[in-house]
Image 1 (cartoon, rainbow, N blue to C red):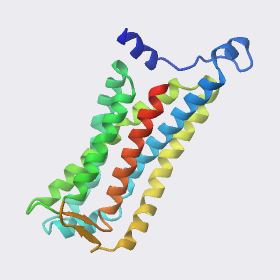
Image 2: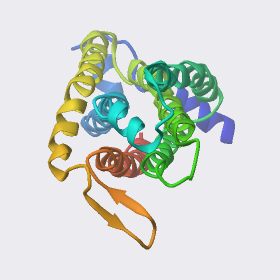
Image 3: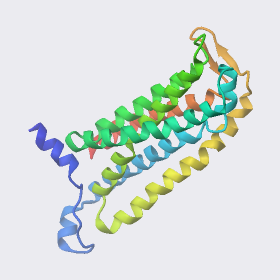
Image 4: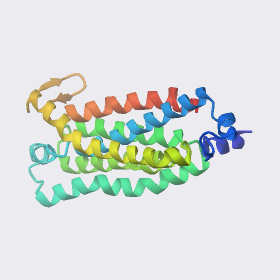
Amino acid sequence: MASLGIQAEQEPLIGDRTPGSREWEIIETEEHYKSRWRSIRILYLTMFLSSVGFSIVIMSIWPYLQKIDQTADASFLGWVIASFSLGQMVASPIFGLWSNYRPRKEPLIVSILISVAANCLYAYVHVPASHNKYYMLVARGLVGFGSGNVAVVRSYIAGATSLQERTNSMANTSACQALGFILGPVFQTCFALIGEKGMTWETIKLQINMYTAPVLFGAFLGVLNILLILTILSKC
């Protein structure tokens, strides 16, 4: 019974029918149409947030890296930036394989949880007494690993759209991805108003400043994204 449920989720939500035909009208009800498009829009948001996770700190990594670890040089900065893409490259086939055998919401939720945890780790890279640059490297790599859900998102959208809708939907997915890359630095600029010193929550040793506020904001959006997936995507 469980395997049948998994198979049903992995199959396309609707068939590739010709619009206006009687067969299409029987399969696609108005309620089902609204439900699947709610899910698709949630995954647009997921794709957007994956891209924001990369670019929201791209301008502040170097000054923050120099602040937390004086031994960091420009070559190590390259590794920190590349770690995101490396993590994404490793995670993509893993999450893709996972989604082939289990409901797609599982790898989606786990990947976003990893990104949320990695963003929180990034906010605490100033705490250790030494080797802070390596903590930043791990944090950025895990954020990239969490962004490896791109293949799952595209797979779900491909299965949730008809042949006539698919091209436009995939184009919108790519547009959301590009928009995330563009708006990430804009968000970073807004948080720069907090300043380098910012404020410190002594109880939990959390510094909220221009370097950490963007990732904390990203973690909050990730939690919101998980809630939306649990309440909306699970109904499809």
